[in-house]
Image 1 (cartoon, rainbow, N blue to C red):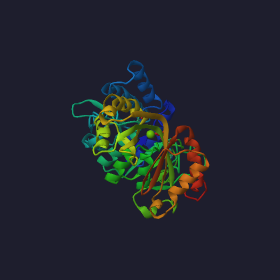
Image 2 (cartoon, rainbow, N blue to C red):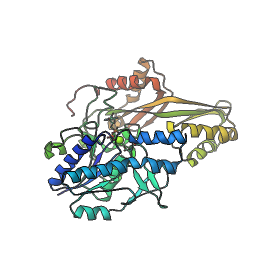
Image 3 (cartoon, protein in one colour):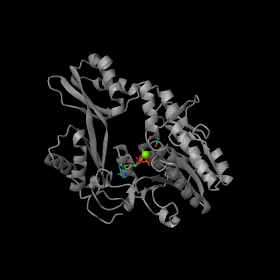
Image 4 (cartoon, helix red, strand yellow):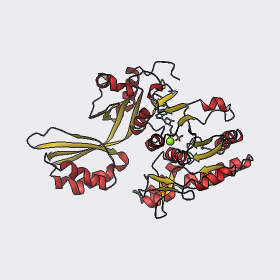
Length: 420
Ligand code: ADP
Ligand code: ASP
Ligand code: MG
């Protein structure tokens, strides 16, 4: 008998029929003698609908109330799944984040999980029930409902798996695994049967929405075996077949998919760039600019500061597009004048495209092939950032798909190398 956590995304929970199929699949695992905890997302479109309603009333919705609202999508889908299991004769109970409780900090709309109490979950499992825990939500020290950021149910699932020391966390979604890039953008993308933890971490942090970054961080910290697989297959498919399908995130580097230098291409449209022109090149300027941005709980991604000419320099950085207006207002109202910038210019029509691969460590010329490929497509690079296993560029978002396709081809990811 194993303890398994299943997570089902919005599409997988998207209709009564799909919820009934999820229940059939869960019932199959339960009947095979496994203890099963299920973490569902809201039905597809529901979280967007709720956020849309909030914005009609308050263009920049109050964080606490937004979380109060957005968390309801998961509560509904969890209860529906419990009912579908009960209707199929399977003992099941659903719990909200606060009932478990899943404790988080108080950063509304992007809270971090701090701890999960496993007592109630274990008691239910010991009674032979399937336990359903709402994804995406938790509770802070003061009893306020919080949410974990878009795509946060992945993190709920992996965190629950870590708390219960589950044997495996299965992330069921609308694709049958992790691909070399988003298969919706590049139809030639290939599924990887295994992906290294480090590569998955980079892919997720650079925008591959298949897993929320924090879920991968949890998997690494607590060594949770995570597999990404399809929820759209026949729910009654043989268990042995299902257990080896999809993509396994491996912690063993030598088990990596293949000796490819670049394993995947990630991209993110959620980017915006802000530049302060002609700031004095003196100690403390970066802190004077980015300190207030951090204090406003806005994450900064890429930062570029140039060599100074006659004592001044341009200072550029990127933020998530959701934080763009807030960051820009903050700089224009308070910071730009204080640091003596000549002007603030901003562009929220940019995107980030990245190549990722452990093999980049031991190969030279990888970034230069990236730059050549983009130049051959006539795409201007606005910012560059590199690490041992990735190179990212910021470009105009109108070229995003072109860039991703060209790079996928240039790095030989289109070819069938029998990885899957
Ligand atoms: P869920 O609702 O199940 O959480 P998401 O929409 O959050 O599903 O994530 C699955 C989607 O991630 C896929 O439909 C696919 O379009 C997208 N995606 C982006 N990059 C990748 C990738 N490298 N491999 C697989 N899917 C990817
Ligand atoms: N329902 C939330 C969202 O749409 C969380 C999730 O689906 O993972 O972002
Ligand atoms: Mg998701």
